[in-house]
Image 1 (cartoon, helix red, strand yellow):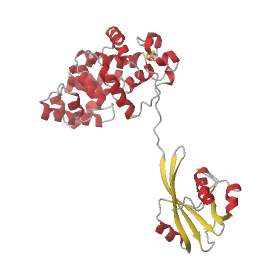
Image 2: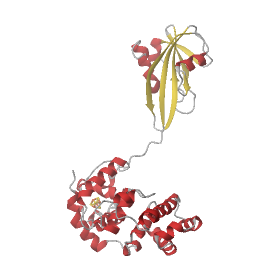
Image 3: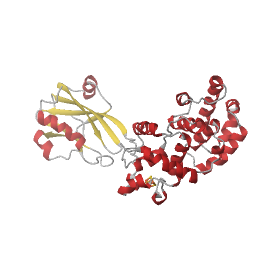
Image 4: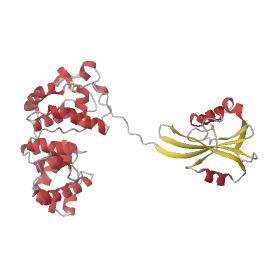
Length: 350
Ligand code: SF4
């Protein structure tokens, strides 16, 4: 594992000279740190400064925040967006009034219980305002750390963030708040996102694996979240004597113009399939389910092997000899899976 303890001293020395002067830092009151951190989620530091001044002037204490009419609250937040953040802020302030006499608890776990406070914000409040040695890991911190350690872990994974919190916990020095803010500042000013980090100005260049290997711009890895649509299909392997039914797909759209086994959208039971076919069936057997993944879509396929008494099919279907299925028809991979069943008959049939 990367030795994070080697970064502490040079990072703090750098921070003492170069740390940013921010309004909420001159009064590291837990309330101020809290409000600023919530505002900084999805908003740039420069934009937050004016909002922070306005907000804390209008609502200088947690009690004021807890009692503020919603109208005023939303007005103060206007332009920052993500209005749930300020609603959660007020709900948490009301809890703090009820449970902690208007003072944010000096306890990481207790902070985590408050609405809208996750491990990063709890870590920031606990370390900056109360000097509690806990990390505050967000995307910026992950970027810096993954470059330092030359790691290709996907930083969008919750497990990666959790592991980073675990790795940093034993490293946090007495100046916990300064350490966490130093990483934040390094990430904002030197080890910057979307572009070349300024490695020549970095106090941690001496121990940075990404710099050593020249892979700074490849890191960190953020794998795109899959937004694939899931479609359920029931595939019908319709057999009459030694022929199987095929259908040509539409000339437009996914797998345009290829051939496919007849299929129904949705997952059908054996009984529903029989009812849908409306003809005499010799036997119907369930096949193993199969998932086929395209870039934007997933087909969750169920299948039935159905032997028919007569070759009755609606228009647009063709009866194809078993041996021609393999060679003469362009079947997409998703349906070729079913050729295996045909080949391996009767294996795969339940
Ligand atoms: S040396 Fe470069 S890549 Fe490594 S931590 Fe510093 S700025 Fe980031």
